[in-house]
Length: 116
Length: 112
Image (cartoon, rainbow over all chains, first blue to last red):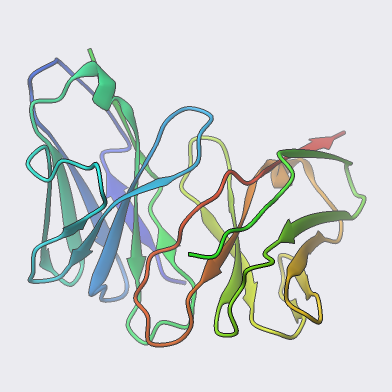
């Protein structure tokens, strides 16, 4: 079956540093990928839609200069949290839409970011 | 986006069937009903989806009301590994690349 992989699965960083999270579709091409953020005991909140070869579309309230998204190939999207602060600590999850989509979205395992 | 309403939590005994309800009274004619589940510290996992007819797969069954304003996810024999948050989501119909909007879901606890 289709697999979406995220890396790293967890990361701890100091306040003010930048962190990059990768999302790869391992056995299919994904023209569209989505990035979600999830705080403890809360549901997933969509941050942005990433389209291969074009700029990402950000949800209201999500700072595009803070959460940089790049979707340079059909199998890779990256999320960079710039100048991270403790309030950015969260569980970040990506998902990918497969070409000829039958409905199912494939999700990565998630990346837990802790900013000290 | 059309909204879904689910109970915050449910409990089940191991090896017994579980019926997880979902109300979606504002569903449109082209919305698909999706179910995903999320185990602790993992990304969501696809369970099942349907449009009008009931659906079965190896994981679960989906029963859709005739008026499509509600649906029920059925786990035929709950195991401890089925303990998760279950999300009922409506996806706009064909031709849309729309993302899925997650509600609060139902936390299922399976008792040994």
